[in-house]
Structure formats: C-alpha cells, structure tokens
Amino acid sequence: MAFKLIIIGGGRMGSALAQGLVEATWCSPSELCVIESAREARGALAERLSNVAVFASLELEHVGPESAGVLCVKPDQAEGAARVAATCGLVRMLSVVAGLSSARIEAVFSGPVAVVRSMPNTPVLVGKGVSAIAGGAHVTKADLDWAESILGSVGTVVRVSERNLDAVTGLSGSMPAYLYLVVESLIDAGVHQGLSREVSRQLVVGTFEGSAALLTSSGESPEELRAQVTSPGGTTAAGLRMLEGRAVRAAFLEAVAAAAERSRQLGR
Image 1 (tube, rainbow, N blue to C red):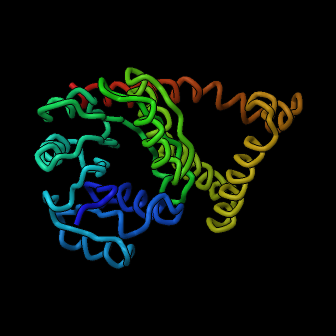
Image 2: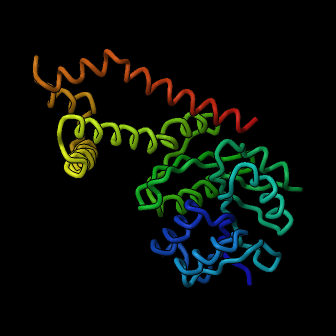
Image 3: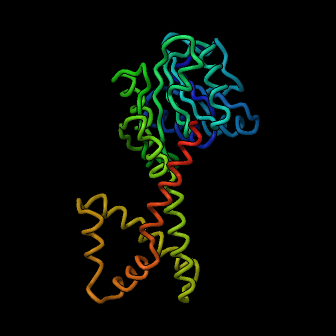
C-alpha cells in the first residue's frame, strides 16, 4: 500500500510530527506511515499512534506517485536512509537532520529531487515548536509551502536561506537546553536562599511561563519589559548588575556561536 507521507525515523521528533499531523488533520492516519528499525520503538509507536502504520523498513510498495518523505534519523544514518528512499522512488523530501546539507541528500538520488532542509526544536513535542526551513537546488515555492504545512502542524515556521540554518541550529535548535539550564540554576538559587525545592520550582517555572506569555502578547520588546521590572537602585537592578558583571550576555553569544560552528562541522 502506498502512503501520502512516509516519516523515516520514529524517534521523539518523528513521532511528534506523526501525532501532530494526524491531530491537525493534515492527512488521515491511513495516509501516513512511520519507518522505525528498532523493535521496541516500533511497539511504542504502534501503541501511541494506533491508526498509523509502522514498519521496520521502507519498501517499494509503500511509495506511490504522490508519496513524499520526512527524514528524521540521526546524522550518521541519514545518507543511508536517503539512499533507500531514492531507491524506492521518493522525489520530495523534508529533512530534519542537523548539519546535513540538502546537496548531500540530493547527491544520493539519480535525478532531481526536491529537498527541503529544516531545523525544528523539541517544543514540537507539545505543539509549540519553532522551525526554520530552506530549499535545496530543485525546490519550488510549492515544495516550501508543503514543508511549512507539515512543520506548521506542531508550531510556527520561518523561511531562511540554507546558509543560515547553522545559525538557526545554534540559536533556536539548541535554545531549549539553554533555557532549561537557566531554569535549573534559578531553582537552585531559590533553594540557596532558604526556599524548599518545590516552592522554588513553582516560582521559577510559573514566572518563566508568565514572562513568555507577556512577551508574546504585549507587543513590547524584551528591553522594554526588562526596564519595567528594573527600578533604579532596586533589587532587580542589583541582580542584573551582578549578571552583567559575570558576562552572562557574552556567555550566551558564545554558546550560540559554538553550537552553530558544531553544526557546520557536522555538515562537512
């Protein structure tokens, strides 16, 4: 049986996309399949996505004239998986593989293939992801619209040139980890000041969530919102002065630069 969309790799990202697409009615469950080589992972997928077909390998019978693929495997498996997709006749591919250029995917196909490269982040697991997409050599606007419709089912999407995807990887792709480290550190700071860990966690996570909502809904810049909290000579000013003295801003600049450079290395 041929499928409209074949997700190659059923890990956290692949399974989140499958669930998001079904919930958004992008396609019916019967039009979608997931390829996952690990037996235990296949069992978990079949349980989570009860109406979606899950297979151990991609076969010719799964691919029809309108079939397209989403490449969701680890970087060291990606070119091999793309080669199988090419052998089976897929001619349109969305890749969420970090560091792997569209040209390297195109190279395993015998003819022109529309490759859209993307970088989503882990909030796609709760439908709040932020993804960037960029088109390869044979991509049309229709291909980009198609890729945006897929990733848009689990969050928001921006379009960039492929040369900017390493920067996106270092920023929004890795950013959840940076933010979790900040949250973790602030919870510890509350405990050091005598709060229980549970109370500190509630204060930090609740403030984090509320601050993000205010930033989204107010239309004001981060600088303006920060200024509203910072009274001259007050407590917040004292805390910010310490953070600036410890070069926290510079540390974030260097962290994003390091992650972006690592993405470039993966692509070489």
